[in-house]
Length: 126
Image (cartoon, rainbow, N blue to C red; front, side):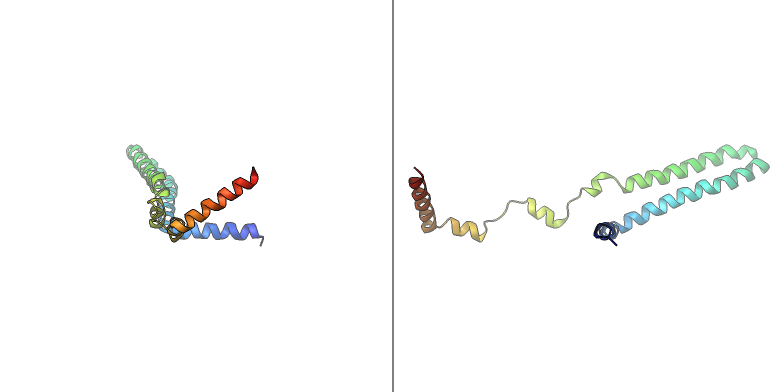
């Protein structure tokens, strides 16, 4: 197995684990639509032979079921769900508190030393 295949497979497994319930719902809806379309052929043959007046109603019901399943799949993968931030990402967007490095850089002694070094470097460059 190449390294690319390994990383691709592991990325797909992580995504499948993260969206496991959504993928199950979409798979069930697609399976429902396929089975409904497949069974309609048998029902249409039976209705054609015995009750042709119900054939149109069966077609309408089948169409509503298949498009309802398709609508459900599209509803499951709406873009707003994929862009939702997780809790750690929300914390990153909030204003950051002062870190220890910021506190140290704000001290008077270090600030004057920094300015002295910068002045000395500027004087030597001239």
